[in-house]
Length: 168
Image 1 (cartoon, one colour):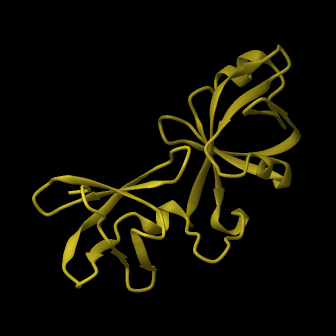
Image 2 (cartoon, one colour; image 1 turned 90 degrees about the vertical axis):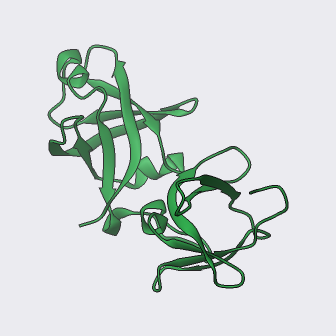
């Protein structure tokens, strides 16, 4: 089953086991829509928790999880990642894609020549940036804007791009 990361547990809150989460999802309020989350420890161990309470403070999410009722129990989760299954992921609008679905796609120039492979997506304030690794090992950064990203074909595993002057 595919999982998508939606947050990182960065600390505890108080003494009753509440955790502080840095969201890594586009929509911070999506935590209110969830009943359960999967917590993946730095060692790769997965545990499913029922969410009892969700609240927001600035750009962070505070969660109370069933079975975590002390600061020590919450502290044991620090550094873990929160993931949701594809079935629990938020629906996408036209032209939107889940990052894991994009990684590894062949990146083609307008003329069909292979530029490289998409290795990472950087989230910036203005727009995402695609990190493309060429056959020679060079990395090219391409802004994920309409002028540059001409077509994304998940089925055929390709992205067609237009390189603006100065990108290479």
